[in-house]
Image (cartoon, rainbow, N blue to C red; front, side, top):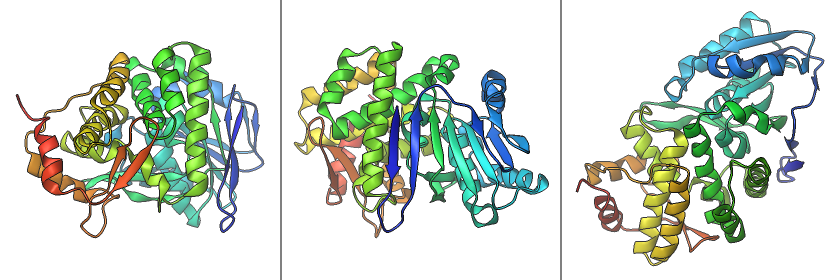
Amino acid sequence: MIVPIELAPSKPVRYDIRIDTLPKLTFDRKVAIVTNPTVAGYHLDTLLARIEAPVLHVVTVPDGENYKTLATVEKILDECFSHKLDRKSLLIAFGGGVIGDMTGFAASIYQRGIGFVQIPTTLLSQVDASVGGKTGVNNDYGKNLIGSFYQPEAVYIDTAFLQTLPKREFAAGVAEIVKMAVMFDKAFFNFLQQADLSDESALKEAIRRSVELKAEVVNQDEKEAGIRAVLNYGHTFGHVIENETRYETYLHGEAVAIGIVMANALAVKLGLMRPEEAEAVKALLQRYDLPTSYEVRDAEAFYEHFYLDKKSANDTITFILPVGIGNHTIRKDIDAETVKEVLRGFGAT
């Protein structure tokens, strides 16, 4: 199964996202695989058995969102220099979204840009982070505030890598799948309500549809000037939660799940979504044991954090909100007090 990415004619870029058993990969250039100890322990031997290259190195970086920093990217770059990678060399991102984002960013700036390939090993990265060319790292001011748009040469999605995925990590990916359904495809949402994603055929169909939907969006809007911003549904609130908890409490997909519930609460308040629709989304998230509540201790401080988000510009906060299930709106005109009232609804009881 192949989902093509084909960007606008003004910048012709084409690559395939292959959803199937990882094939034999043969390269005629130097290759460096970037991974972490957890993924390497489970799957590195499998990957190495399927790669042929004249020179092959493995770069191992620490595991976890708190290592998604410029310092870790510098370690990747140092390894590239020490192994004398050149402009024709290739980086392979072998891991979850953190590995993919950092490897892509390192590839985009090493000798002004070398090729890279995504082989995502988490559900979240398979349906979201590996698709579309966003790369970057976090800093004290927020998530992914340093980075670039840089497309991979190919993406290989093999669900066999998910067999060792912890339950929480799997659920974090489900949050991104639900996001796509609520924003773009009511029939897909209905499918998810009936499906059991522990079943491999249902899971592959959910991955396929999620990737297909995201590809359609990226093909129209690579650099988030318009419709691609819709993919940030749940993220505007979720990124504040991650920042407030120093990326230590929630996985990214868990924070997005809470952010979806908060965004839905705002949509209900504005009359964009019926309460029973918001409850249906919440119930689907809860079915996979995703968190759906968060204690907002200070609504004013939470609101101020929105201004550090990349989607905010000219002192205007952009909110991505559902219109029912299967449609969306981008709003920049919501007054602060309305948002704060919703935030207070998530306060201590």
